[in-house]
Image (tube, rainbow, N blue to C red; front, top):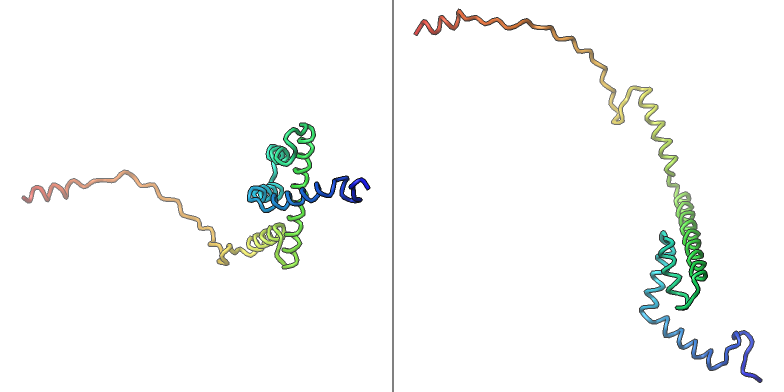
Length: 158
């Protein structure tokens, strides 16, 4: 036999065992866990093309071709968009199952309430709108007349 086993990708048994040990060690490495956490945050959040490029560079071999980095970055952006859409749909589904009203339903109800208030003359607090008062026009007053006589009397009395 030549040392190859079916299904091991043509790797010698000893090399395959060494890779398994290496992978186990990498998985428990805090830096690898931090990389995984950052990747999930980036993919679930809004992933910008620049951030996708950084992630792609981090996970590809150091000498990877620019087109491979660009292709991987594009795939990460698409994955991010698909995951965000899946989360949005799941949240909407759960909200519907709980019977929560949608924003459009709330807007429609607000409009109906405003229309009913206008039709009945009520305000939002349920009080009747005060009737529009007509204020009488102020009469123009002529210039004030001063009575100098009363002042003179008081000054002459002293």
